[in-house]
Figure 1 (tube, rainbow, N blue to C red):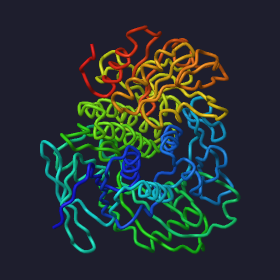
Figure 2 (cartoon, helix red, strand yellow; figure 1 turned 180 degrees about the vertical axis):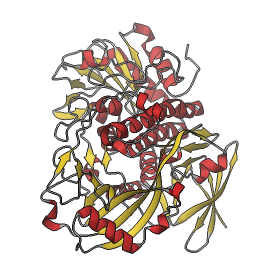
Figure 3 (cartoon, rainbow, N blue to C red; figure 1 turned 60 degrees about the horizontal axis):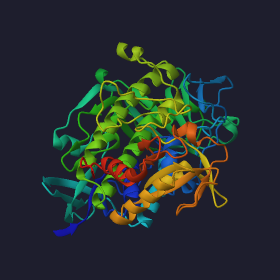
Figure 4 (cartoon, rainbow, N blue to C red; figure 1 turned 90 degrees about the vertical axis):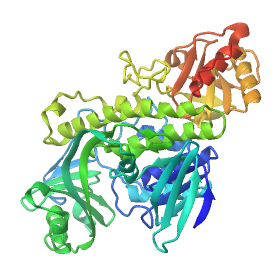
Length: 545
């Protein structure tokens, strides 16, 4: 048995696991990923990635590659209800909390939503993670793991050859899905409503040609006497999502190839349609959140940490945002810039967001599709889509309390610590940048034209400690010269959106959230004030004095 050393072992190479690998490599972290399947997903699954997720892909340098991976073209809102795919009678669903496809998010972020099936996205993530040096091992299974005070030992088995490897790592991240074996081995339970429905995903190949009559949709809810379920169409591939009643003795095994062909024809409304069955995958629509997101040096992310109904595609997006939160913290700890205590904030920040988002997914299903939900779901107030995607807040002091507000309206940002940094378009030396382009490379300090002292303080700390920290002045560009070139705020929105002044400052984390804000410069104490703020943001409770 071979013995190897790495910094992070990732269990699970689907969407979230690949994102963690990609994000970690951007911080130079050594990664070994083990995925039991021989390749990336062949099922379309998640159809959409929201504007906040695309902002994270932009920061990771892969937004253009993702958008080039065969996007779907939509008509109207993209949510269709019909008797069959080819029925001349149909209508579009307009959920009360959602924007129309054409509206975009230019007022709150630099990116729009992206409609793309998961089987098209995962190869892009894999290619870019491998390009950055991630060791991705498909067809490899985690056999066992043990935890020590200073690390984790993982036993990995090549499923084709049976060859075993012992990998010593500093940390292990479980992104191994809703039925996470890692979570089970740790004895971590889950809270929530649990399983809501048993479902099979049926994949078939069928050329509908002109039969769709130029309909372009993300999901179609089809209801007729022979078929009731949801359907996606990507090229000549149809994905049918059909519920079944396990409590009445029904099972996924009853969906034979012959039955799948019949269901596909009924959904299409074409009894003579040529259909090639490709596979059936059973899964459960569930609503649950892990009681803990970590146990020592082991962390849960994505479906291993939380599962939610598919309405709104919130599960995948929440998982990707888990990955971004955890990756920068692991990167800074392993890089020697942050205290290990920083990793404790992963759970205190992400678990409340997961609980809130699970509730919103339940409420979305209730409103969009009239889903049959438990009575308590009827009491959940539906949050508007923009706020849900961009407005969630983290506790400013790292620990949620009774006064913590879980959301703010991102269209009227406050700039308070714990909120996402507001979006601005800025110019530097004639180049147009978004706020997200600034924090993509690490911590960033923004100050006004009169904040030269803050820029100098940031430079002093960065040179002394080697921590990735870049400072910029934002304004009209006419302030006192300094070592940082000014960012021109052509719309003049910097003071109001960030709640500061010409000599104030804001410290933004590598995931785009505000860590600290000062209303004005403090003279001779600027270095110590910024030093204390950065140390606190990096998990240290020790002040510089």
